[in-house]
Length: 166
Image 1 (cartoon, one colour):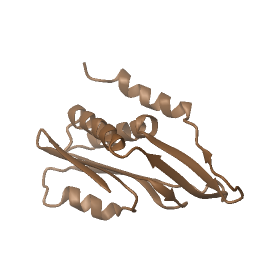
Image 2 (cartoon, rainbow, N blue to C red):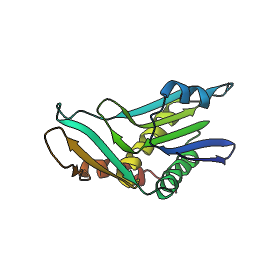
Image 3 (cartoon, rainbow, N blue to C red):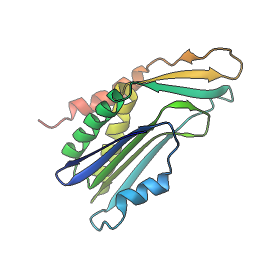
């Protein structure tokens, strides 16, 4: 497990890339305990889909160190762009069977809009720019196949460049 934490304008954010599963409730509690300045908590949990019952597992590969650094850059941008009080980003790697967690983003803020937008921003960039490679292992195939990037994900991420602060 690789863990990175940074302080920005008294806002601590956490980025972890790990093989083991995570507990959404525990991670939310860690981010919010003893805090009275939080008015909104937005959590996004991405799960492995079963692709109509055909998927045995989704395998995620990454470059250790590079993945954490890139995700930390996105987290840094989020805390600079929105008035957040806390942020956690966890992304798993390895073989993940359908139904299990893949990614978690928790954004806290005094107000809901900032928390929603920061979580949405991070997921768009995790989908398009984080250095992870996905291979689908199907139940009826001897070898997995790599998952191609989707144009729709790139279009989703483009809107943040249009709305970037000057």
